Figure 1 (cartoon, helix red, strand yellow):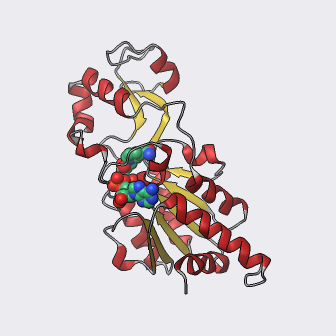
Figure 2: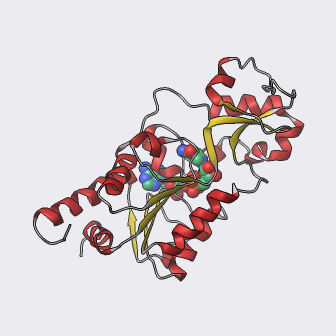
Figure 3: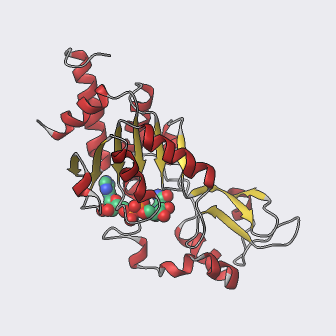
Length: 254
Ligand code: NAD
């Protein structure tokens, strides 16, 4: 059976499908991934984004952050983000769990998005926890680390740095969704970063079919039921189209 049709068939049969996305789903939107051939970690030392490094060298970390990660107005969801939003509105996807911080799933119209690594919408004070919108912080950025208006503490983009725990509520929700899922699709992730890469194992242990859609091999291909090696922005719209064709032609029931 064609693999795209096979995934459409799995989604059609499932009561709860969940997608786990990584940086690879956003490369077609112009955001580089971390570990792919053009990945950020091939140009920048990841230890610069250790939380301890932020405390020691806040000005340097903010300079790097602004040059690499600051959101650009031209960045928009691509057909892969849109296909996941369509699957949700067709009742075929319960939720997206994402390792990305770019907000592109929400921009594409996905309603239930669990952000495991925080988001680029906010900056937070490392001392008192006061939150600011990142746009507001960047509008007055002058090359030095921005500081809290309330207590003077250094601000941190509200994303998870190396050495920091994941937000507990998001992690709990992601584990629960993984346990409940009948189909668990991993899209555009090398599955090299824990604990997100434990989620497919949890889903598998609870009986889910595992689908991996990635442009290269991942660390968990051997546990997957279907592996599609390809670009998310091409494969996902084909899955949506296969589902729609299945309903039109009576192969699937709505
Ligand atoms: P990763 O870089 O480790 O893996 C991305 C994978 O996607 C690679 O295997 C790559 O071959 C594949 N890929 C690249 N383009 C693709 C495409 N068009 N279609 C399908 N696959 C494609 O990224 P990860 O697994 O998400 O690593 C997790 C870390 O990366 C997280 O900490 C996350 O916060 C961070 N990150 C996020 C963003 C973002 O918000 N968009 C960007 C860079 C890094």
